[in-house]
Length: 117
Image (tube, rainbow, N blue to C red; front, side):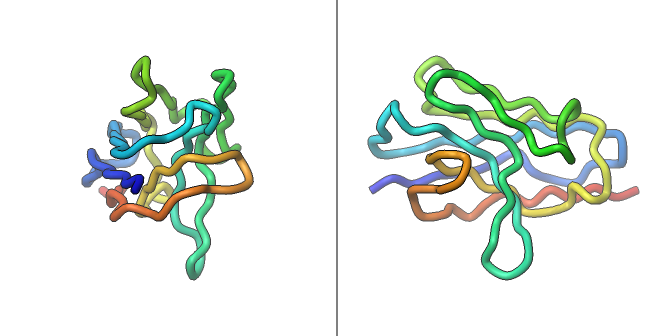
């Protein structure tokens, strides 16, 4: 049973920074990528950033140049450094494992990011 725990969210001012962390428990194949997501409408989630098994990192256009995804050596913990935050970044952020087009496990609770002055 794979479970994800996200943390590090909070309140930030526009232009501020936050660093999110994602810890995974259970066994995840090292052939799976890892990604950060945030809510869209309904039950849909938007892929914000993704790291492939070969280390290739993808960023959504809306966060490119502002967010940075990193992992520890074993990918047990994944981070999302969020700089130059904008009010439109306000959302609940989740992590999961999978490809850029599919996630493979149940969602955790997520961590709330609120950007407001």
